[in-house]
Length: 103
Image 1 (spheres, rainbow, N blue to C red):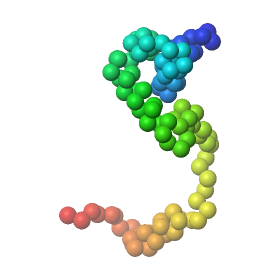
Image 2: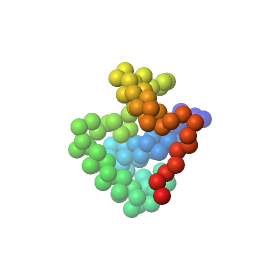
Image 3: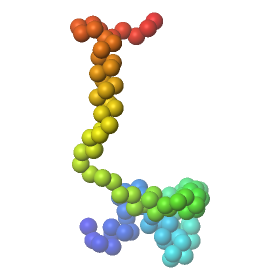
Image 4: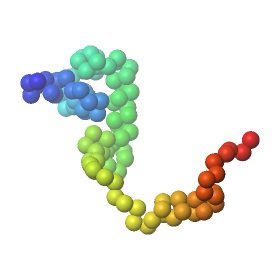
């Protein structure tokens, strides 16, 4: 893949939305042209611009496009709430019995 193709034909949905909005707002391209270039119908592109304007009103508007996610294992429950819940539930159900839902 060429570097220019990465920006002209994004594969991820958020990247595609970002590039389409950038072309419309920053480069000043007409909505119909941008919609066609990025594979949107004109009405869905207008919906995208509407939703983007709403996103700008939120405290961290760039989070939609540039969300940082933590990779790897989730941190262990330091409060041990989950473990306490499991122990409490296991004490209510005698060992060897099967769980049956109420009729």
